[in-house]
Image 1 (cartoon, rainbow, N blue to C red):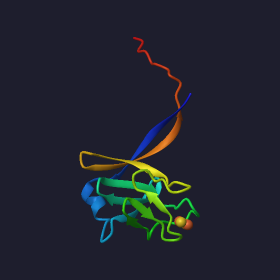
Image 2 (cartoon, protein in one colour):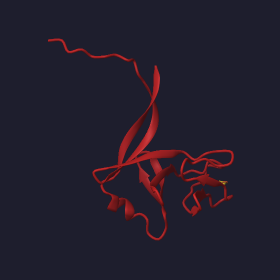
Image 3 (cartoon, rainbow, N blue to C red):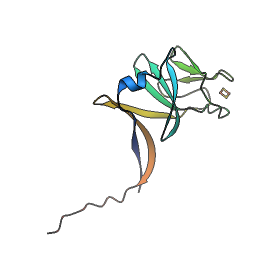
Image 4 (cartoon, helix red, strand yellow):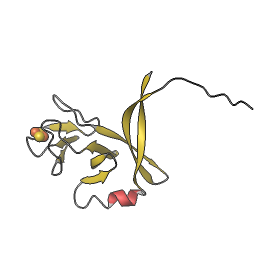
Length: 122
Ligand code: FES
C-alpha cells in the first residue's frame, strides 16, 4: 500500500542562521538538499516553497509580498503564502518545523507501507 509521509531534512542549525538570509527583505533563496528553497518570513512564522513559479517554471528570486500573497516578478501571478494556491495553479509548499531551535524542512514523499509488524523472537 502506498502512503504519503514527510521526509525531513535539517535546513538550519538555528533560527539565527535562517534569519541571516533575510537581509532587507522578507524572502530569501537558500539552497538545500531539496533544491533551491524560497523562504518567506511572514506574520505567522516561516514558510518554504520550491523556488519555481508554476506558470512558466521561472525562479521567484525577485518576488515580493502583497498582503498574504507572494507575487511572481515575471507576470505578477499571486500565490497564497498560507497554502501556495494561485488562480489556476499552485506553488509547491514544503513543511517547516522548528524543534530545539533547529529549522527542519519537510517534503511529502510517496512510500510503500506493507503493514508488517516485527515480532522479537528469542
Ligand atoms: S512565470 Fe510567474 S507568473 Fe509567469
